[in-house]
Figure 1 (cartoon, rainbow, N blue to C red):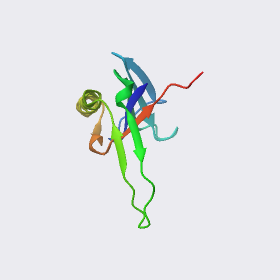
Figure 2: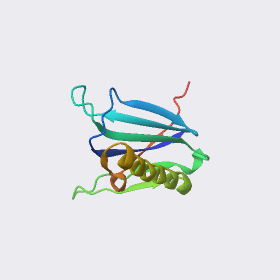
Figure 3: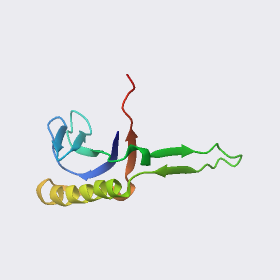
Length: 117
């Protein structure tokens, strides 16, 4: 099972065709806006989990007023590791890569379960 985070990036970091980097058990994926501009617009970091039983997601039925609730469970240390990686990436790319900001405070988290065979 994998737990990941996706964030928008603001800045002028040029990448020829996006990129994927594997480092210390995590995968960093860098997305460009389009083939003409080739500017970094989004980053995804994916990590293995330690205990897949701790992960769950439940969305309630939609109430008549249109509201609903979402309950998510995850390993706090993996969540915190992903946020720290985004913050570190923002610092490094701010100095070396001409980015203004990684929107880590507005991150989208995703859970990927292995496909059954």
